[in-house]
Every structure is written in C-alpha cells, then in structure tokens.
Length: 609
Image 1: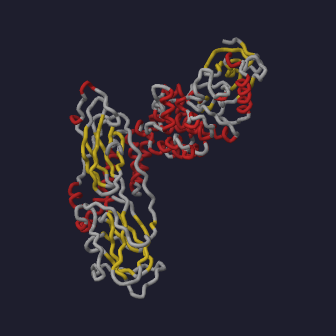
Image 2: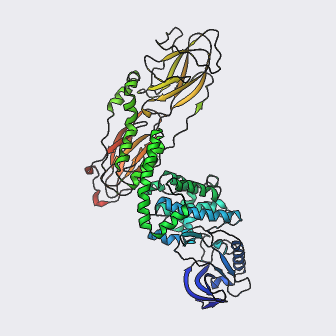
Image 3: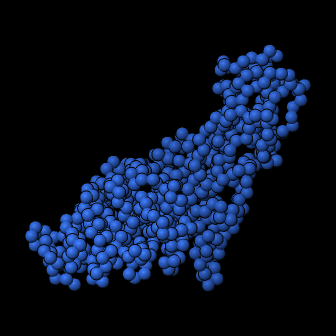
C-alpha cells in the first residue's frame, strides 16, 4: 500500500479491481478528499495499458452529467505511478445495496436504473461506450446513483484478455456480441444495464451457473428465467422492458439509452411517482417505511386502474393490474371479486338475449350447462406470487373483403353452425330483410340480394351497416341487402372472442350469397388455489406460472377446451388434473391440501414439472 502518491496522501483502501486499487486520499494542495484509482504495479510497465489509461481519463474528463463520476486529475503518461483522481462517492455500490435489500419495490428499482440510463445516454452521445456496466460500477451519492469506471475494460493487452486470462468484462453482465468478440456498441451497454435492472427488481441475476463458461453459454443462447415467474410483483410492463433489454438480437433491443429511459419513466409514472429522483432520495432515507407506504398506495392505484380497464372491456390490461395486486396483497377480496366478474359479467348481462342463439349452436348447450360459478378462492396469506404475462389483446381490425370463393373456417363440431351452402330457392328468414345504409354502395338492377351469414363460432351477434346487433340463430341467419359495399360486425358471446369488423361487397344477381368469418378466441383464465405456493404448468409447459395468479391459456380451435394442468411444489409429488376452460372466462381450480402428497425422502420436485 502506498503512503503518498504525488500530492495525494493515502488514507485507506476502499476498493480493488482487476486493473487498479482505489484509495480514499487527501489532496494536499486543494485540501479535499478524493478517490484515487492507482493502476496495479504489474501493469505500470505495460505501455499499451498506460496509453489506454490516459485516453480513458481524457475521454471521461470531458463528460458532464450529474450521473457520471467526475474526474479531477490524471498522473500523465510519464509518471512512475499511473493514477486517476475522482470525486469521492459517499454511498455503497448497487451490488452491496441489493445484497442488503433484496426486496426493492419495482418502481424504485426502475428509478435507480433510470438514472443510470440517463448517464449512459450522455456518455453515448459523446461517443463513449462503457463496456462494463454492472452493479459494482454504480454507486450511491447523496440520494442519487452515479456510474463509475468508464472504459476500465480498455486496460488490457492487445489480445483483449486481462493478465489473469479472464474474458474481458464481467461474465454475468456481458452482452452476447461482447462474448463472441464482436464490437461493443450502445446496445451492448443496454444489455448489461438490463441485467442490473433484473437483479434489482427480481433479487437475482438472470444468467448464472456453476462456472464462467456455463454462464457465457446461457447468455449467448438467451436462456434465463422469466422475471415475472420469479417475482410477479414487478408487473408485466417492467417484465417487457427487461425482455427488450436482454434480447439476444441486437436489433430487437432498445436502440438508445434515452429510449430505455422513456419506457422506465412511463412505468414509474404509472405508479403515481411524479419525480423519480425525489422518490429515490426519499426511499434511500428510510427504505422500510417508504416501501410500506408506497406499496399500500400502489395497490389502491392498481385496483382502480384494473377496474377501469375492466369497465372498458380491456381484459388483458385488467388482469395485468389485478395479478400484480394479488402478488403484493395475496387474497385481496376486492380484486378476487373483480376476477370473478370477468367470467360472469357477460353471462349475466346476455343470458336472455343469447338463449335462442346458443340452442342453435348445437353442442354449445352442453358446454354451458357444465359451467358453474366457481367458489371464491381462499384469502389465506401466502408468499409473493409469480405469474405469466397475459397475452396481449389484439387491436380491432378492419378486414378486407376476401377475393374469390369464401373459405370454410376450421371449426369444432361442438361449436360450429351448419355450413350447408343454401340454394337459390331458399326462403329469406322472417324479419330478416334489411335496407343497406347510405354508405355509397350501388344498388343492383336486380334488387335486394339474399345474404346468408356463416360465422364461427356460431354464438355471435351480428351488426349490419352500424345497425343494432342481433344474435345469430334460427330467427336471424340471413338478411336482404342491396348490392354494393356493406359493413359487418361479428361479436362473440360472453366475451369469448375478439370483435371483428369488416367490409364486403354484395354482388348483384339471383340466389343467395354468403358472408363467412371466423373470430379469434380470447385466452381463458385459470386461477389455481393451494394452501402452499406452487408452480403451475398447463399443457406440458405451454403456459407456466404460479398459484394464486390468473394464467392466460390460449384457445385456438374451440370455445371450450380441455387442458392438462400440473401443480408442483418442492418436496411434494405433482398434482395432475384435466380442466375444461372456456375462452374469455376465468375458472378457479382449488387443489385440496391432501392432493399435494409429500414425496418420498422429501425429494425436491423439478419446478418445470
């Protein structure tokens, strides 16, 4: 250890890395304390390392941003001891802070990473790539975070290896292209920052393994556990931000640190935080109290937002918020009631209207009889939940008219209406005549044309040219329309499907023409309740999640489908069940405590089944 380096008195060692040792020192001329980074003695004689050290000092010295470490002084290339003097930061590193506080609220983790992203943005605009973004290189200082050690990875020999033979960079945070020896870019820094966000929000690193080669292989292959599976309280919006940061394909990542900062800012603002810097400073002053008060306010905000999405019939958005509430406040009765309403709302509202239509759909009647209102899940407390992200709600679209003959939709015999092509002599259904609205269509010389509907599934209501919707069935299978362009809207019963609005030209001529369309089924919801937290796998792992969260199960072929559900917990034998789910509705599966039998020898069950 040095006692003095030029004008600096060494007070104590405060950090050590592969390239340098950092000391707390006193500037004897300006009478202030500084952080003095001194290159290791075994590198002092390496001309290439000293040149790069100087270049790094000069590069970072011209950067001006509150989130970047400020450089005060540099030894010079000819000095016997190479050093850089910087401002002395007062707080711990993100790494040590996250070790001591493993349950940082997601929004506060985002506040920390937001400040790092803003600092990176300033550096990138100046043409500086960090190359070693990691929690150890981010430090707290007076309630804010600062990014340190810019370009430390440049202190290597020409082969790109350190003197200890390790691959350049920090294994758990390196971007795939960095591992493969390709050029580091802005997106490389953003990948590394994504690993930091994952660590702060989830409590563990995305890429880990028994040794460095194993970790690097997982990074290159893009294999990591879904953050929402580990800690569902982070919410789906932050999950999607992490996904984008950690994309293996560079083109699918954020293209700038400013773009990432914007998304983080929107996520933070959605929780009611107006000033991220002020919120972070308040949190750091008293983490426990702030986290408790913030979480209570966040739960109320998420419930209100979820209920608003529910009223707007935006089911995926509602489930995003409701799932997060259940992760933060297991068994919240207000949210559980809302989840139940997702499945019964349409049935209660439309039961009279759809009675005839459902009868006409044949096997759908049997499916409806089998449905019941599931009992409200137990509200007993359990550890934090983990959920899979709900499938995004497709935007309503205007489908262009098909060319040529209408194709028959792929259907299930349970749900399909008769698809026999009507003959020209077939009579128009009573009360089915309807005039086309004045939308510019041209009337054929032969007068109105008989138009027969052929929807899939059959239990839909149909609106023609903006008119009132009528349930498809025996009394409403076809209408008379004037030749020309018309607008149709097919709407599924009980929120089973995405509404479909489209235009089609009705040609002039004798006989009956057909309007046939298939609606996209909405995913079904599955809510599994057990006495102890457990993993849930549906259809061999196609959908994975945790108990006490609404899993989104895709439906592609039929309204009612049977799914294989496996519930497993460490030390217990898996529980298997076949469950019938209806598209667009939520069903509760209660697993009795006796169903999860302790495995022989208390062997640990694989989480993936």
